Amino acid sequence: MSIQTVATKAFPGQRPGTSGLRKKVSIFQQPSYLENFVQSVFDTLGDCAGKTLVLGGDGRFHNREAVQTILHMAAAHGFAKVLVGQGGILSTPAVSCVIRKHGALGGIVLSASHNPGGPDGDFGIKYNIAAGGPAPESVTEAIFHRTESIKQYRISDAPAIDIDRLGVSHIEQMEVEVIDPVADYAELMQRLFDFDAIKALFGRGFRMCFDGMHAVSGPYATTILEGMLGAPAGTVINGVPLEDFGGHHPDPNPVNAAQLIAIMAADDAPDFGAASDGDGDRNMIVGRKFDVTPSDSLAVLAANATLAPGYRAGLKGIARSMPTSRAADRVADALGIPCYEAPTGWKFFGTLLDAGKATLCGEESYGTGSDHIREKDGLWAVLFWLNLLAVSGKSVEQLVGEHWARFGRNYYSRHDYEAVETKGANELMASLRVKLTALAGQDLGHYVVDFADDFSYTDPVDGSVATQQGIRIVMTNGSRIVYRLSGTGTEGATLRVYLERYEADPAYHHLPTQQALSALILIAEQVGGITGWTGRARPTVTT
Ligand code: G1P
Ligand code: ZN
Image 1 (spheres, helix red, strand yellow):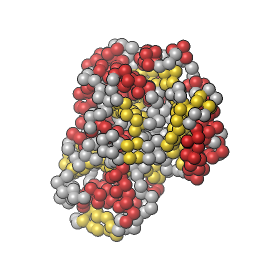
Image 2: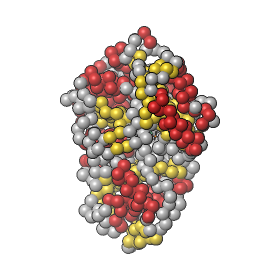
Image 3: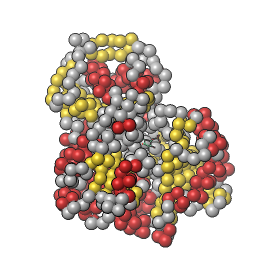
C-alpha cells in the first residue's frame, strides 16, 4: 500500500457558498471532483502532521464513498488521526462538538443540509475550523483559489476500511477511530439542560412528536428523548436516516414537514412538536395547533434563557442574521445586552461567539444555536424548549403569547421563488440597487421608507467586510422588506423575499400572518418587479 500522486485538471465553479460546496450528486460523482476540492482544503491547511481531523456526514447518497475517499486522502496528507462517525454519520452540530471536545485541527462535514438527497439530489462538503465552526470567507476563498489551479492530488491506495465497527484501525501511518456519533453530543446536552425536569415532564404524561425527516437527527433524538429522557417509544417519527430521506425534502418548515404539522393540528395533538433537517442543524418548533416562527423562537429562548442550567449566568449578547426578524433585538434591549446583526450564514457568528460577545444566535431559516458549539443546533433548540416547558409549566402557545404581550409581535414571513432564471434574478437585484437612494422618504401605501440599502457588514471582532448581503427597505415604523439571492441552491437562482411587520398592540396579535403582511407583500412586488423579472406570479414556498 502506498501513496499515489494523481494528475488532475481544475473544475470550474468550486467556490463554497453560504454553507460549503453544494452540487448535484452527479457532479460530485465525476472522477476527481471531490478529490480536487479535498486536496484544495488540505493544501490550504498546510502541514497537518500530528493533527486530528473529524469526519462525518448526514448519511445521504454518496456519503459512504466520499468518507472513504477523504480518509485515504487524509492519510496521504499526513494527518495523525481521523475521528469518523460510525457508518460515516455525524450531524453538523455533532461535528462541531467533537472538534471542540477532542481539540481537532478541524473537520469535514458531508451534507447538503436541507436540500433533497438520492442519486438525483444534492451532495455537499464543508470545512470547519478548530473552533468548531464553518471556515470563514478568508479560508473558503483560499480553498476556492486553490481549486482553480490544482494539478494533482494525493491518495493512499489502501483498501477501504470498515467504518461500521467502533474502534481503531489504520490507513498508512494514520489512525482512524470510528466513534459513536451520538455520545459526545448527548453528554454536552446533559450539561446544558435540566434533564431531571424534562424527565419529570414526560413522567407526567406530556406528549411530544419529533420528526426526524429520515435524516441524521433521528438517532440523536431517539437516544436523547426516548432513551435518556424517558419519552415514550414512538415519540420520534421518521427516525431512521435514509440515503434519499424517503424521497422527501428534509427541511423542517410547515411546507416540507407537512406530516408533523398535520399531527400537531389534530384535536388530540401532542403538547409539543419539533423537526430537524438533513444534517441536524435546523429546528422547527410547533405547539398544539400553533407554529412558532424561528425568529420568535430565538426571542423566546433569549428572554427565558436563565431557566436552563447552561445559561443560568445570563446572556452576553444575541446575534441574528440580517433578514431574521427584530424580535430578538427587543429582548436584548430589555436585558441590556447587545444584539448583533450579521449577514446570512452561520459562519458570520463564529467570531462573535469566540470573542464572548454573543451567547445565543439565530436565523429565520429555522436555525438557532449558542456558544456551546459553533454551528446551529436543531436538537439543542428542541431541548431548550422542553426545558422551558418543563420548568415554566406553560404551553408553547402560552409562552409565545405572553412574549408578544410583553415585547410586541413581529409578524414575519419569507417568500421563496425557487429555481428561477439566474439572469432575471440578478437583474432584479441590480435594478433594486439602482433605486435605493431614491427610496428613502418615499410614501409606499401606509408605509414611509426610512432607509434602503444593500446590507454590508464589518465584523466587530476581526474587521473583515462582507458586502452585497441583501437589499433592505426599512420603514419608519420598523417594518421591513428584504430581498436576497440564495447562496445554497444548485439550480438556477432562488430569490428570497423577507417580510416583517412590528405590531405593539395585543389586540392585533392574532391575525393570520399573510393577512397581517399583505400590504408589505404588495409593496415588495411593486418595488421589486418580482413577477416581471422572475416570470412567477407567486412564491414557490412561503414560510
Ligand atoms: C440558507 C439560509 C441561511 C442558512 C443557510 C445554511 O442560505 O437562508 O440562513 O444559514 O441556508 O443552512 P441561503 O440559501 O439563503 O443562502
Ligand atoms: Zn442543515
